[in-house]
Every structure is written in C-alpha cells, then in structure tokens.
Image (tube, rainbow, N blue to C red):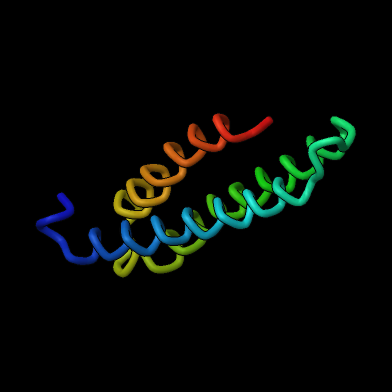
Length: 96
C-alpha cells in the first residue's frame, strides 16, 4: 500500500518523525526527575510524557480529518504507531 501511493509513504514518514520527536521530549521530561526523587514526582513527569503522546494522536486525528487527500489515515497510523510503540517498549527498559 505504501509503495503504490507516495502520499501514504510521505504521511508515514511525517508521523514517524512526529512520534520520534514527541518520544524524545517525553524522555527529556522523565530524565529531569532526579534518581532520589519521590515516586509522585516521577509519575508526574511520566504523565506529562503520556500527555505529549496523546497530543500526537490528537494531531493525527485532526490532520487526517482536515486534509484526507494529503494525509491518508492508514499512512499516519502506520508511521505514528509503528515508531511510537517500539520506542515505548525501549523506554520501559530505561526507566527506573
């Protein structure tokens, strides 16, 4: 499907890059919490990171609804989730 349509491939790349950027921002938020901090502070930083990722899902919905010809939903979902889910699994390995 992606090879047949350049719009789908472009959308997958754009949303893959968005997922990578949001994951990096979420990781920076979590890294700011000191190792000896209380658990509540760690959960708060992790919650902000999850909020960023949810903001990415909202952006996916808005962009795919507003401009379906330029941003096909299948490409956006493949790009965003295909990048974000493996990064989330890697984040659990690095979290304390």
